[in-house]
Structure formats: structure tokens, C-alpha cells
Image (tube, rainbow, N blue to C red):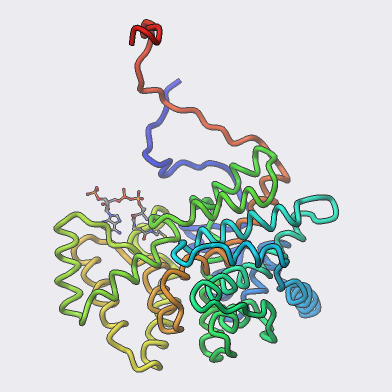
Length: 371
Ligand SMILES: CC(C)(COP(=O)(O)OP(=O)(O)OC[C@H]1O[C@@H](n2cnc3c(N)ncnc32)[C@H](O)[C@@H]1OP(=O)(O)O)[C@@H](O)C(=O)NCCC(=O)NCCS
């Protein structure tokens, strides 16, 4: 049998999904709905409901869903205790992974706490897992894990900043969470599906997905992009820096995509928000620097910004510390991961590909004392 060799499984169709279509004629749709409509008209909870339960909620369904999420925001005492033990210099993605893992020890998957209940509990608690640890590690402050904010977007910003957040920022956060929620067979989602395919538990699948998302070629790119943007003093400086990086064959994080070849459809939405927030905050320079980098990357490499590039300035304008960027991706993508775990389990087949062996054969065995 001949095996087609493709680095990193590029271009390989590895299964079927009815959750989202990325690339091709549909650009990007979640369960048939364009991300442009969802980002413009929905709050994140509507999109999470769509992903988890397969259809957009009616108002009463959305209300009860949000009531359930609201009621389970607090963290178990044991989890708070563990979060307090995690050193301040830990990467927040490790905190998210630990938080999910510990929750799996405290509230393990069972008939009475099934995959739907766990998905909702994770959506409800991930903001507090991050904000509780962050506030404790930075300021030795034990924050309340509940808030009056109605939505996950507002709740997270309120817990993080310890004050009710600006309306515009809450809306921008909804848009960001919607755009990050789902993206077909990306590395972290595929990881979750592989783990689910072994009939492992829900928390293991999500924990593994967090590990995959952490890397800068995947979710970690938004933090890495911020690091690049913030090094430039002005657009000219940015152009010089990027030219030098390209000459050094460095990767410019936040550019390029495995699935798209001309543009990331999510970019135009987040780019608009970046412009709006940078202008409103009186910091147009950050946007100008970002746009200069975008133009140059297209001229020099035919590469376009992906969702992570302008997300960096959007979060920065909301006063979100850079190390927390990728964990926000987790708060959102957990909805997509959950939908894929459900789908994998509903028609399961162990995911176990073959490899093309390139090592030695038929070596003569040598006893340990003779090696
Ligand atoms: C997303 C990504 C991993 C896709 O990778 P891929 O499909 O495997 O594409 P490749 O890495 O093979 O890239 C093809 C070429 O473009 C170059 N390239 C791709 N992305 C680049 C980037 N961001 N900066 C500079 N060069 C880049 C590669 O170096 C390679 O050049 P070569 O042919 O001279 O070796 C890649 O574009 C990347 O590393 N981007 C930066 C990280 C990032 O933003 N990740 C978030 C994705 S949503």
C-alpha cells in the first residue's frame, strides 16, 4: 500500500464533523451559521449553546442556560486551596490545565454528572479558575468567585479587574469569545477527539486539549504576537524590526494559517475591534503598528494575519495582562472541544493512524555487558 507523505497531516481529511466548516466556499460557519452573523448579533452564551446542543437557543432556553451557568460559578474550596499553592511565575495555561484536572478529581464524570453537565460547569468556572489564581498570585488577594455580571464575558472582566467592566469591553469580549469558540479539526480539538476516542473521561480530553493549545503555533500565538507588537515604538520601527526578523527566518506569530491561503475570515471582525478600541483608548499607535506589520507581511511573504494577531491589541486595550491571552481562548474553545467530544463519542472509532517507519531493521542483539 502506498502512503501519501504529508508533513503535519496537512491537507489530510481525518474524519467527518457537523460542527463547523472552515475554509472552502463556506469560509467559516458554526453548525451552518456564518461567524459574521454570530459575531454581530449574538452573545457568547448563544454560540456556546449552539455548539453544545446543536441549535440556536430560543429566549427561554437561553435564559435557563445562563441561569444554570450563573449558579455554578463558584469554585470548590479544595480547588481554591490548590490554586493558592501554584507559584506566581507559573504560565497561566498550566493553571487552567491544573484547574480542569483537579475539578475532574472533585467532580468526576458519572451518570449524574454527565458530559453536558461537565461542559456547563467548565464554562461557568474557567473564568474564576484563572482570575482567582491571578489575583492571589499577584496581590495575595482571595477574590469572590461569583459576580453580578450576567454573562461569561462580563464575569471574567469583573473578576479580573475587580470592578464592573466597561460595556464596550464586554461586547468586544463576547465577539472575541465567539470567534475563538470553534474551528474544525485544529490541533487542540483533534487532541480532544483522540483522547475521547480511547473512551477516556471528559476532563482528560479537555486537559489534553489545553496542553495542545498552549503552544505558540496554536493558541499561544496571541501572546507571542503581543510581544512582537509591543517591541515596536512606531510603524517605521515595526517595519524595520519585521524585515530583520524575516531576514533571520524568524516566524512572525499571528500570521499564516494551515487551512486558509488568502485570509483568515475572522481577521476582519477582530481587526475592526482593534481599531475601535485603540482609537477610543487614545492609543492609535498600537493599531498603526499592527497594520504596518500586516501590510509588510503581505508584501514580503504573502502572509495574512490570523485571528491571534489583532486579538492581541484588542485584549491589551482591555487592560488584560499578556500571559492571560491564551487562557481566554480556553474559556471560549471549551465549547467547541465539548461539542467535538460529544460528536466523537456518539459514533466512536479509536483514532490510531499508521506511521511510515524510517528506522533501522534486523539489528543483531547485543547483551548489555557487551554494549
Ligand atoms: C499557522 C502555521 C503553523 C501554519 O503552518 P503550515 O501550514 O505548516 O505552514 P508552514 O510552516 O509550512 O509555512 C509555509 C512557509 O511559510 C512560512 N511561514 C508560515 N508562517 C509564517 C510566519 N508566521 N512567519 C514567517 N514565515 C511563515 C514558513 O516558514 C514556510 O516557509 P518555507 O517554505 O520557506 O519554509 C504557520 O503559519 C505559523 O507558524 N504561523 C505562526 C504561528 C501562528 O500564528 N499560529 C496561530 C495559527 S491560528
